Image (tube, rainbow over all chains, first blue to last red; front, side, top):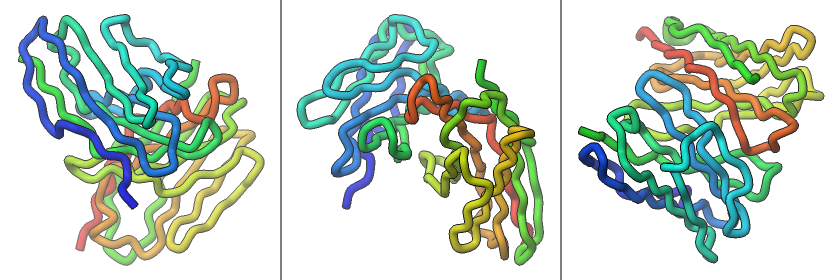
Length: 112
Length: 113
């Protein structure tokens, strides 16, 4: 039973560029959440997708956007990258809103 | 707003018990979680407890919840070198739904052989 998978594992981008990160949820899960984890910090909630719509959003600017596809997989897009966007981006999935989150191994984004 | 606090470091000897503590601010939290993160990896769900419970035991793990003091602890019995990792406490405030988690900064557990 595959868990949450994310791609790519590592990414290096230049300031001002755009990036797309991808996530496939654990089998049987329909809800996908994205978190940003800066070095030495706990993860911070970006947003959550359910039924292909953004349901909740954390305190992140509009440069951060996402999408959920009919097969429940999801993308996180970040435009106009800043140096401060360098972080580990974690995808988590769950079965609806009332079950624990299962996390992937993350995508390490470095902005130079 | 929500605030979750943990001590940054803990060192224990192999075979001893480890106790990792966490305090949170949101009294309406319905779920409280413990996650483990090893170097270069994502977060592994260890255990979670509903806010109407005082204790939950799962093999070597014991979670204690003092809702009055908003204090959560994770006890690892017979700590092994493979338990060395960062442990995150997280709360799920009731008003935002079960999936919007607020994390502490993590406690780095070092197990000394």
